[in-house]
Length: 309
Length: 296
Image 1 (cartoon, each protein chain N blue to C red):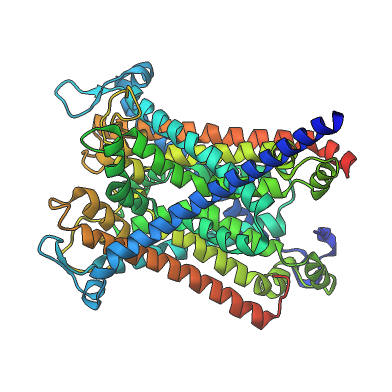
Image 2 (cartoon, each protein chain N blue to C red):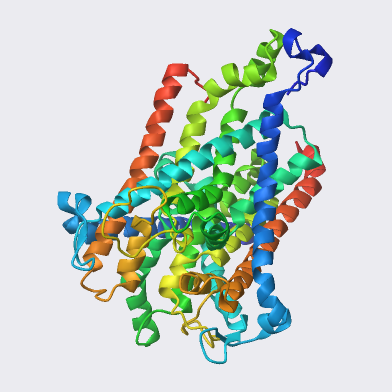
């Protein structure tokens, strides 16, 4: 883009400050305000809670029971619920997503891909509440039968639904990463006698590693922040699970269930903002990590790529 | 001897290649199957309750009969507020980033903020909306509170969509306009925006449709279990399709009896989302033809 030195602006507008530029700069800058505003508000709304109970008890307490006579405000079992459902989801979605992206970029015939790709992308348009609902009607009975428990509302079911929610992100970002690998690398590998499979697993995938890592991190962030699916299917039991077939409750589901019913300004109200703050910090760190790794790897790769081309 | 070793190695390589490629085709097929299962099951479960009455009547008998008109109206109203807030804001930010800003630490900070906003969980937007719009600005649980909350959530998407559209305008057009003596703002208004509009609209609508399906941010900002009539202003609570699905699926006292209604509501929501996406694509095609922009 070209820059015009201010002295060269034509006639009338010479002395006036560029009002349009000022306006757009203000709006653009306010994006930072929104992010810091969210953080500040979460902090100020959870401060009254931390004034009474130390942060250490909040993070390491296992008992979340704000409505009992002896209220418990420990989020460890909620964190455990979030961790186990997210872990299960990643175990499913990461291999499945990477393989599906490999197929889309490296193996599918263009005519077939033109139909499959939009169909897969459509998955990201399905609202989470619909996926949660179908989880109740289709998945939960199957999981109940498989596990021999009275119902299928547990961490395993939650994991499957979270995997479905994370898949579109992982697939489309991995695809972008794979597509950015120069064709010459594939051609060189094939010319040396490697098979297509060897080329994609040992040449293309390693070259796309930073992008794939970012895809996984963003999928992870989505799974941790997902609310409706786990609220509807993971069983809503705030305790530390012993297995994937135990019911759990996540950080997100706790806010969703309880915030509607607490009196504004109560300890419980502020405790829920503290849960929100924990959630914000966790997802913020994950996004930041994805960002940093992607950029650092890109910088490391840049000179090497130049040499190759 | 060495030829035979070569042959076995080669056939092993071929076998592995087939196996591997079969495996990734299977993975893609599985994802596709999930998508198909969702659509087929929604249609199978919901088609039988779809009727004119279902779309245009109020719910009756404690949500066990009648239609979902207030949910459709509520979702449309909230989505309109979201659109009016998020699209202009996203566009203005994108204009700043793409047309005015240089690569300074300030703009890098803005981009970092946008990427992180996109990763903030929707339920966190929900509690932010409660604290800011519902309580802080005293807008109460209402269409406007919910619409603005969803608007904040949509901003990262509308910025990205607008920026992509602006970036697709060739720099030579701007340079020609500036060289002829037009100011930067005049150039944006007369040269850049007309060309970028199709992309802005399409990307904007696609972002908005995603917001239309969100449930978590509505939970405490205005969505109601059941209301006696349609909302009369944007300062009243509302019923919404996604929240209604949640209510019928998990909160209702007769869950099995209302299951067909839940399927019908889900089918209507998916139908609306797909229809809106289609509208976006048609708008893009039309405007593209009018402007004759082949590369857009």
